[in-house]
Length: 239
Ligand SMILES: NC(=O)c1ccc[n+]([C@@H]2O[C@H](COP(=O)([O-])OP(=O)(O)OC[C@H]3O[C@@H](n4cnc5c(N)ncnc54)[C@H](OP(=O)(O)O)[C@@H]3O)[C@@H](O)[C@H]2O)c1
Image 1 (cartoon, rainbow, N blue to C red):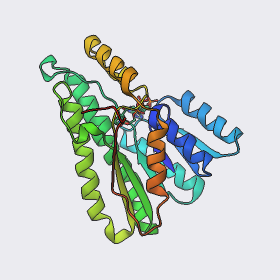
Image 2 (cartoon, helix red, strand yellow):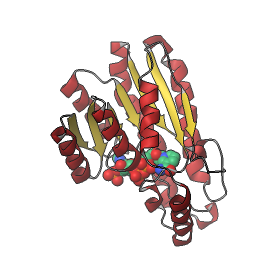
Image 3 (cartoon, protein in one colour):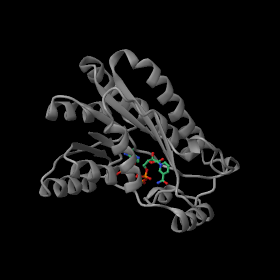
Image 4 (cartoon, rainbow, N blue to C red):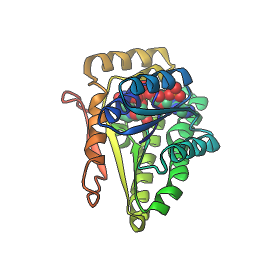
């Protein structure tokens, strides 16, 4: 199981969950210390884990990351394209640097993951690619246009991928979470917006193992069953 964005939040929770279920996990993120100590902890608990520092906006680093998983395990069963950030702000604030960053990480990072894993999966005629969208991939809110655009893009890419990989017996799932307690709101730089998101997350967010269980559901189906989309929210979340 190869997971991008495994240094915190949903990726970390999924690594812990899958490792406890007996999977070998390969962890990628920029914060090398975080993935290394997570890998060490999982190994101490009897699991198999490998930490590979990488930045998803560098296609060659994503390729090396996936290649190291194949070198370690001979194949790649599941890729979870999870790395992402959410620096929300109204368009009129012109945070062009943050728009670029979201497009690079949330869209191009997912594409680079697909590019790195697909040749191996095609060759083996097996594999599962899981992309992480969001409720924001289904609903657009004022103040979140660019983030929503990136997450709509992840849905579109996932549906196109689903259709294209049929001949290769590859499964695809796009998971769209609502508010889940992670470090994600820390990526918001505008102080007023950050404050309202932190409050919203404190009031509504559910634990990150909710996402890990959704991953577990998708990957544990019989090989002929392809769970293509999962959308889940905190029970109390309206939008
Ligand atoms: N939490 C939610 O409510 C929620 C809801 C819907 C969708 N999502 C999506 O879930 C995914 C995971 O987010 P999270 O909630 O777990 O937030 P998080 O705790 O902030 O985790 C984000 C992860 O992405 C990694 N990342 C960011 N930029 C990266 C880059 N350039 N290269 C490699 N890794 C990078 C971070 O690692 P480093 O900083 O160490 O690189 C971190 O591990 C995101 O795609 C997010 O949009 C989250």
